[in-house]
Amino acid sequence: MTVAGRWSHDGGGVTLKAPPDHRCWFDRAATMHTATRGGIDWGVVNRDDSGEAEGGSSGPSVAEGRDQSREREDSSVDALTGVYLRGAGFVELERDMARARRSQQPFVLAFVVVVGLNAISDSRGHAAGDRMLLEVANTLRATLRSYDLVFRYGGDEFVCAIAGLNLADATTRLALVNAALAEAPEYGSVMVGFAELQPDDGPHGLVARADNALYREREQQ
Image 1 (cartoon, rainbow, N blue to C red):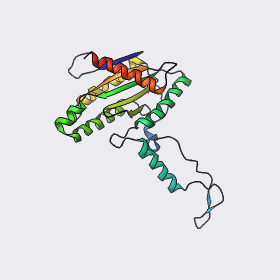
Image 2: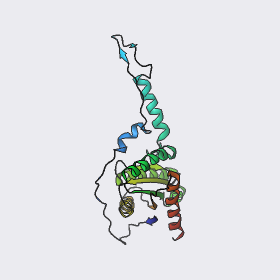
Image 3: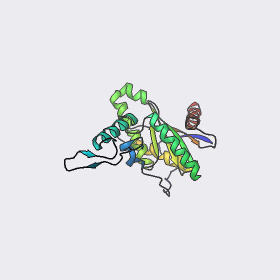
Image 4: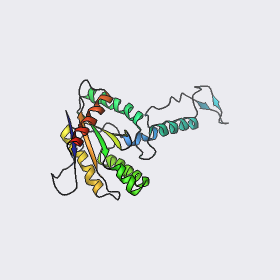
């Protein structure tokens, strides 16, 4: 099932309240320091009093491992917004979809677009557009749970993967984003298309269905 929605802050419509959190898979924010969640096989290295390695694995040193971790993070995380880039995001999405299927939990994909970003950049400068993107990314992370996936899909587009919530609850949760953006220093709004995980969905197909739901919503505006 796919739906799309847009919310305004003009006082109309329905007052929405976020549902309580009953589940927690892992704290995704805590894993962003090693964005691929891959880890390193350190081996076993013993050191004598001089600090030289003796025996054990010939794997990387701690310093080398940290450098590799930083390189993975730099290549996986968007420098502007701090969320996953598209490639790393799809890797994480595939894992989350597999986890949802194993646990038989509901899983909703939200395709988010920043409304009027080009107009903001044209009228107020590219720096203002960048601030808006950062504001939206921060609001998405603050509104969702720490273990929900957020990644940047394109210039003004983000993808959010919400596990353990049904479509109605996920829609309610994302509705809070525009309420928060209306109060933010960089005023803005978003439109969202939703798709629920189906048995035959792959990561790209699920994103495409949510994107199509958003497109239909735009056509109705």
